[in-house]
Image 1 (cartoon, rainbow, N blue to C red):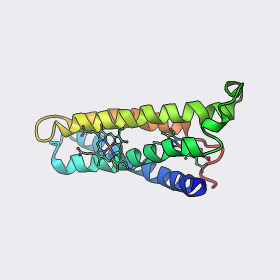
Image 2 (image 1 turned 90 degrees about the vertical axis):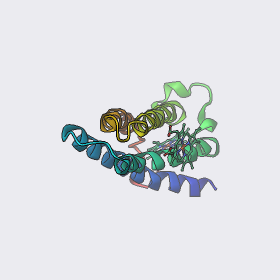
Image 3 (image 1 turned 30 degrees about the vertical axis):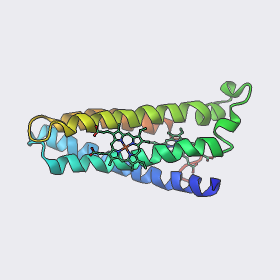
Image 4 (image 1 turned 180 degrees about the horizontal axis):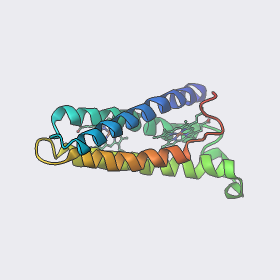
Length: 144
Ligand code: HEM
Ligand code: HEM
């Protein structure tokens, strides 16, 4: 089960990145192009939201079955930058990123036809993208 989940988490990361990047680009184009925010645009926000939600559920399970997750939270793990990344920084930062994406989508959803949902998606997803990029374990990904 561990290997399967690890591969799934590793492949899904491409979809998360692609989905969030596309959502941000579309939202920036809509925002700066002063276009009305329609239901079709809301659905484009799902491109980033759905893979991110799936990924965080899988990541959470992985945290308890991977030797790099909770199992390495032994004495002194904070002094080792690699353990600290997998045990603390990566999970915490990704959870914050997914929460931001959810807030951005949720606000935008309520603005269909009335407000600037593009701005909400561009800002929240944009910040989330930065957080994801700074705490992906680049030492092991995408090489496996
Ligand atoms: C947007 C969300 C997330 C993204 C894009 C993401 C991305 C990644 C990537 C690219 C790797 C490296 C995979 C590899 O080495 O093949 C990884 C590993 C890992 N992630 Fe995430 N992750 C996310 C959320 C989470 C969450 C929420 C948790 C835990 C609560 C988590 C726990 C882990 C663990 C434990 C590993 C190490 C797995 C292993 O190689 O044994 N991830 N993640
Ligand atoms: C397999 C896992 C998951 C998938 C595929 C998924 C998918 C989705 C989708 C498609 C939406 C948008 C619904 C809409 O348009 O209103 C959504 C919204 C949401 N999800 Fe998830 N989700 C998953 C797991 C989770 C988990 C585990 C949580 C919380 C612990 C969560 C919290 C939320 C919240 C709070 C919203 C509200 C957004 C709003 O205000 O519309 N999701 N999710």
